[in-house]
Image 1 (cartoon, helix red, strand yellow):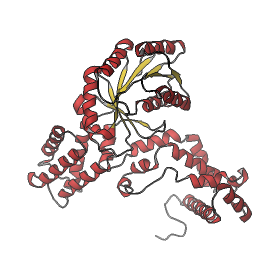
Image 2 (cartoon, rainbow, N blue to C red):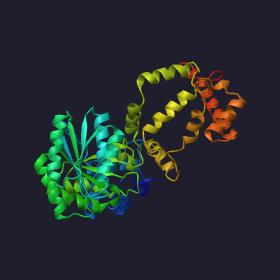
Image 3 (cartoon, rainbow, N blue to C red):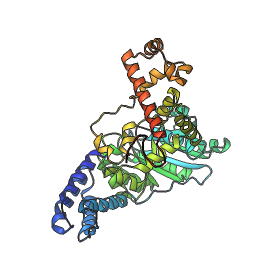
Image 4 (spheres, rainbow, N blue to C red):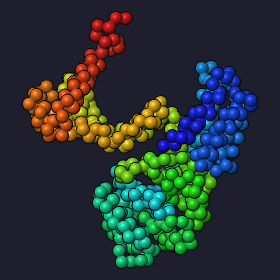
Length: 440
């Protein structure tokens, strides 16, 4: 996510290394490089210039506090300005009506239908809502089928009228259906086009006038950069939408849309989305995104993702097993599956400060754990609960059942035993913090 922009900004800050103070002379090249980095990320020239002018104004003459270098101070100034450029603070998502009507708009291929499913899943699992998704795209043949599949996948209701070509009546009928079936959120997936045109705009405007939505979300493919911002302005002039959704952030995202859209249309980014999985939707926090762009990681989001997946009671139960040196293969498998639910592994590791840069060229496959899962899944319940009871003959059966050779099975079991020994050693650390036998 924004890897090229992050690298260019990091390079810009190096101009200040070794300096004792920020002044107009030594900041000139830094500001110039920051502006080039923004332009290369497809940020509008006017926005890039205004941004760097603010950075320069705040930086010149700024006193460097003890233990903080000029480059560190510059990073903080740029972080603050990036945060403000992207909206400053999290934007509220209104859900106070019954039913709350949410209208989804955007160009074809921006990810509207997938986002509709993700939003329904988010509102169901995180907000305790009972959503109804509405297939109001009457032009794309597979649109209704796609939304039906997604609705079934996440366990929510869908409303569609395959023979009806009047999208306004479809939307109105869907709201009646929601009231009759006690659905408190209606999410209307509208049709997209390959480009902005009058027919498309009028159709979406007619739906808005008929159903009076609480939220109108404009979905943007974040890989399209400045073009997405121009499209957003055209839509906003007609619809006056309430917020923006950035999709496909796991792709080759340059950053122009994220950095420019709030400035251009003065509407907040409310959600960011990556991948096709229904749980890969996050609320947009400008400060956290600024930190990630500057390579600072995003520990807050990482902790929130972990808290959402790990049950406190189960965690305490696991802790007791570890303390008693009873951690087994089933516990290990359970933890792997919980981690996988948190999202893309490389994105998760990138949230740890300093790690994102270290793994930027490393290919981390989300299927990296499949081999381990296959080995454990080939064990009997007794074997999973009793690692020490696995004999050579049992290993041969496990290897055959998992499609692995004996060397792989032996290597995994050796690593597992080493991990258990490390856990046991950590449990034996006394309150003073010394390992057994360690001398001061």
